[in-house]
Length: 141
Image 1 (tube, one colour):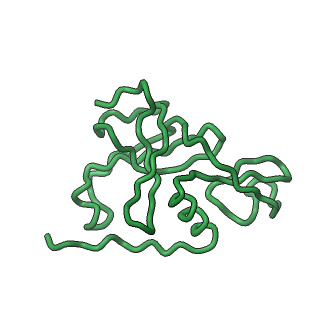
Image 2 (cartoon, rainbow, N blue to C red; image 1 turned 90 degrees about the horizontal axis):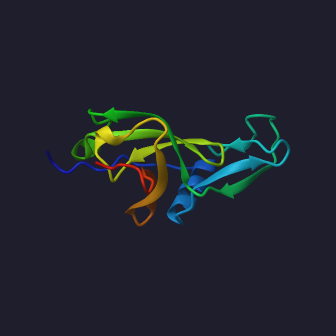
């Protein structure tokens, strides 16, 4: 197969803040100053009380797998060489849920409740993606 370009990411608004912080190796979410609710994905209004007063907070990047799937078909030809891809839905310890690839383990290692930690994949100079790996003490093979 000929070289296939990575699909572009066109970030704007709160998405741009997300990707800018990932490039700095920071995993962020928001906390409402009105009701203290943790908010993710980043937005302009609290999803709990509709307040427009949201502060950006940094996550420690640790959490537990809420759910997962192993992808055997690529969503785009660029990702074909990475198959199979394990996608995990992670409940971060701060109270928000995020999705990313699970790396540094075999696809059959993922399990609900498994502790994971964030890692930052510097894909290109201007693009860093969030990934998770099994936390220390979790079985990886």
